[in-house]
Length: 500
Image (cartoon, rainbow, N blue to C red; front, side, top):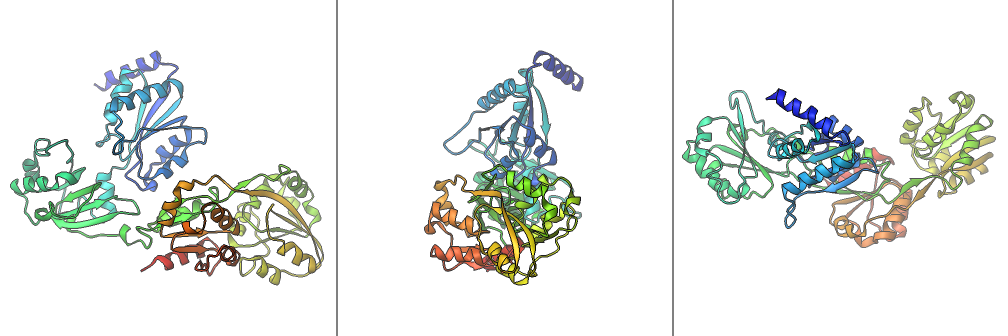
């Protein structure tokens, strides 16, 4: 059989030399961190991505900007017949080299990936399967329920409880009850009472433990513990994975103990800068609504002044970076790091210092507090030239005060902060969130100019005093400020503000 498959596949390649390859990729059950390395690699390469309704749209951020995204996800009131999806894949392969079919969970575990593979074979199109982590094992694990456990269960069975009509003629539940081990039911909420009755009739104890997990692996995960006889009356909503068996009596909870579980946080930082913050919030169990209120663009002269400053850097005594954004822009234009010999480097903030360290340069000066006022108070007096590459729109306090101390400061525009397009239809979602974070004065001004104060959630978190002052200028007086003015400090105050 395998030989026939490969012969047909080789023939298909010959017949469809101009066709691309379709990759059936499992996206996992919801947590974007559960996407496989191979899946991410293919999303980075894809010309076309045909995707289902995904639990987390952030997976699409791995796609190239020029990739074509085709949504074929089934939703209430929006059925998409499988044959139409098959046709989309075939047409896509005819005009693109790499087509990714992104499916929730695993393509071959109740994912209809087999039907799509058969359609591609019939059309003579090359395909590959990239397995995904199935909800049948991931969701119980995130709820602290191992599907096998020594002394309790040596096997598990995965079964669907979904059918248009009755579930009784789809699965022999009585025989399944006699089989033993753990039973994992997918798509079975609507028929849970019927399933319970059949399993008890098959010999399972009415007191068999049951765990039902809704939106497993996501920030809004909720677990319900009950037993088999009470399953039908238990308050369980779709979509839930139902685990039946002795292992469901174990409670090895870890995910639901995370401090931000169930909380939605709005992140307004620039898309290119927000990855660390977003990842940290998700690692703490939170859900992120990313609304970038700022984006980084090239300076008006397309880096000409910055290039001249980098060329003449040996004539300066100090090079001061006020933001991590300026660091790679400057070093990309530097001829040789040896040109910095004799030039001292300063950074406002440890994040900027870490960015400098990526170029094997250790900052000579970092203030104790990451604001311009503290920098000026602690910076040594002297004479000579200082190079200050920074954003076009920035406070004048630093160059003015340094000049008063005897320094000759050259301010060079390294980048511009621009206002990106922000979707105003998200205003209600923003207001309904648990908190919003602001990491700069510009994010405050840009966000509130677009959405207004009424769109703010109950908790407003600012990274430092300048950001908080801008909030106050807009009439927001209830913001909470991080004690340490960096991302770690922001996360600490966020968790403290949302803890019960």
